[in-house]
Length: 513
Image (tube, rainbow, N blue to C red; front, side):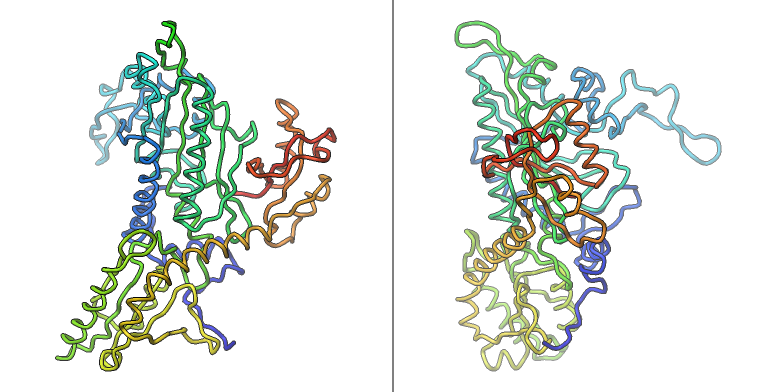
């Protein structure tokens, strides 16, 4: 193949971190805001998030949840009720202490000492405590259960090291909360929502994930069990793409969520919480992006097809635009992946080639250029984002007739969606190392100089307490963490590589974001 001149200046293989930042900029997804750790999500980036919202929200509603909204500010006393919870979030909390500013006499503003709040307010890092207060009011009897609610909101966790979409001080997310009559019902629901996340990640984002339980040291603060979906990025690191928590009665006891049971006694409710965030956009970038920018799975793309008329500022432009409008009408009348095609006719001024590369970098699945000759011959010039280059190193344009393109694009997009998932899954599976039976072999797998080591599956005895802390420190020295114990893992059949005792399960170990 001839030498390809890619659209980005940084290649993934040379500097993955810098490549990631360049994709965000080149695809016009987001930019720094001037506030440390906070980003401005631009229209194309927010459009992708809106698609995640729409698709996931439909799945959440299908499981019987109603959407609602709770305040951004939470009284500090709410967190103090649940000691493990407040300890887990204490270092990340942003706190409001005053409600008014005054001039400092030097041209600046300072908090008014007389406007100090009687009680500090925490800027929402998560909503278990304030939603728990509401549940305590709403739930009186077993007949009120299960209670299933969800909210789309923003949260603030004061991060020391930030990276757009992956770890920001403010981010957007969805958080679901439920209360149940029994532990069995709550645990079943925890896993049901984990499956909702898995299905959304794989079927909508084409993001292959492994669902499983987090070890004790990785649990959500105050939870009895935490489950996650883990995705492998193209640098081999893991990304925790979503979590689902069984909270037992810990938060119910702290918030007073009690109900009259079927025999007339008083019981504590069993609660769950679960969430995904704009981190999933980062996962899409690092799973599907290439050296030409972003590639957006068709189910997720705000615009699945972009039509670029090659306008010349002449009298012939009107006929060309009419031809393109007819093509757009043909396409929007079609359906793919269960929805009408989303088609944009880009009439912005500028050369078609310049606009083409804008959309390549943004990752629009199909780009169609139409010039005067195409119109005369009843054709279009079509470029697939997932098959961008021909053998000669030039863009791999196809030239179907306008009738053909209207018929074939829906199938093309559906195939593209599936192939992106299968390709990412095949790539991930090839980079999970199994059969590691000694700690020294684990060290060797992640030794300095090993490029893109991926993940390693090991067997362990699931130690707890101080023994687990020692294991975690050994992994920390290698910059490794436990990811999860996969739901579909093979049964343990060997010794724990950390303790030498008989193993009870298999767990994934990796470097992570």
